[in-house]
Amino acid sequence: MQNALTPADFVGAMTTFEASAPRASAGGGAPLLRMLKGDGSWVFGADNVEVEPDARWAIDPASLAQGFIAWHGGKVEAERMAMIGHPPVDPTSLGPVSAKNGWEDQVCFGLVCQDGEDKDTAVVFKSNTHGGRGAFFDVFDAMKARAVEGLGYAPLVVLRNDSYQHTEYGKIFKPIFEIVGWLGDEEPEKITKRRRRK
Image (cartoon, rainbow, N blue to C red; front, top):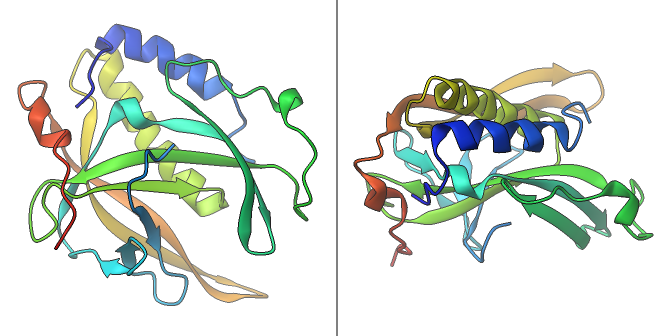
């Protein structure tokens, strides 16, 4: 765990980070973690490796990032992200894009599996959807509350989903990061190991 910031410093960084882009509206080469639209199952990587149902994943506080992404023709046209503790992306600095929806808010964090078949596997979660950003900020708020109290703020989560019925698109799944514990500062190595499943 890259715990370079004390809880007090982290609170300050989170306050700046929180104000850098509206809620309502960085991956480092790790496989992308995503939830499938069809059935709400979690997978990662180009091969869509399924996540074990009750595996615990540690979110690295130093990996939190926020910024903007532009999608065009089903592909990423451009992306600008800023890690927590660094100056936020200035929306006025974003150039023109061909994307139909222009630049959209995006959030991101890295996770490392702590047990099960995927233990030590590192992935990255990125989202520009309403549900994905909401799940991100649910975790963000819990981390900030812990940091304010001077406690460890690296959450252990289990990947879940919820759903709702959309009048036009039918059943829509949204991600949930269920917090089941917190990594203590005495176990920093558990969040830094990197391994890909064979």
